[in-house]
Amino acid sequence: MNSIFHRVSVRKFQEKEVESDKLELILRAGMQAPSAYNLQPWEFYVVRNREVINELSQVSKYLPCAKNAPLVIVSVYRENVRVPQYNHINLSIAMENMWLEADSLGLGAVWLGVCPFEENMLKVDQILNLPQGLRTFALLAVGYPLTEPKAQQDRFQAERIHYVD
Image 1 (cartoon, helix red, strand yellow):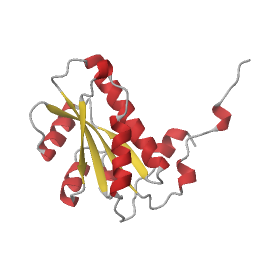
Image 2: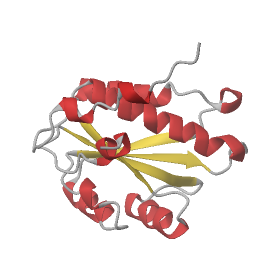
Image 3: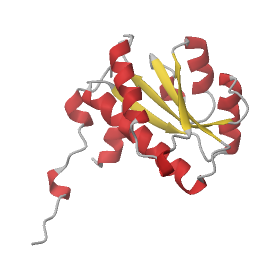
Image 4: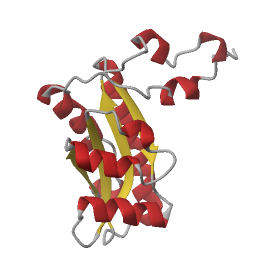
């Protein structure tokens, strides 16, 4: 099975809260991502409210797997920071860092892109009531996986490594 399917296959979560210390480590991993000109033009909103998560899960066809997650981390960026060639690259690195940290903590995480679909971005902005100047980038549904052992989420595949000496 292609490794990308391992990455997005955590679709059901246990009804177990994510501990605050683990959540802090995940968010810290996102904040530590490299950023252009030493700027961090993003912020993170942690959503635990079931009603809000349910609303978010209905924004697009890709978001329903967020519905059962105990929490959803929404990454947003500041529109007024003028490093457009780096904003999304940096946010992608931040999201990847958070996904990897969640995985290392034994959690499942599903990275759900919203950007660049303007209509979906606006819907999430409105659901979260984001202040003017902040825009949604992506969502990361996080929780303890219900059906998959951690070994199935491991993306390392030795047969894809080739040495040229």
